[in-house]
Length: 182
Image: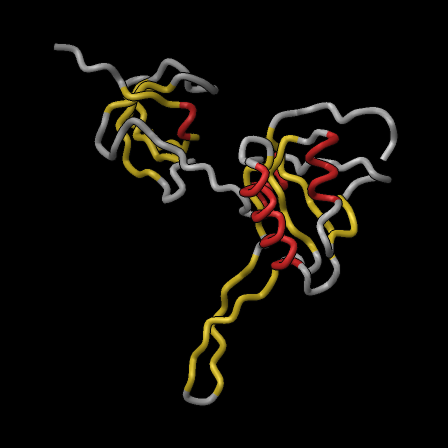
């Protein structure tokens, strides 16, 4: 590692490369070190992404875990020289993913695409509620919620525009519940 220190960007997801078959050992050892040294505030989470499939052989059906990224472990941590050394010196770790010895955090888009961190979106309205559109081309119009997607990212609104009811699909961030007038 070079002499310049890492700039602490807050907790970010990093990819750690391991020897083949050492993913779970690295995860277990890192979790023990975090517990023993009280590093919960700087190394938050360690994951080995797996996909569970059902394997049918003859009359039996078994759940089988397949590693999505063999030889890689994902670590959510605040990158400092100390945390870099802790992770880097675990048996089975060959290094962080990034140019040279400089770890590169995953982007928010990469994390979302891999399903590593699922953000639960809470919407303050239900189907049938009156909402106001607060951003986008339809800002200022009102409507009634017709449908909310399962992931709560998209909603269908029957918007009242120019005296007509028009169905539109919007991002949940683009609307807010209309205040009740007593």
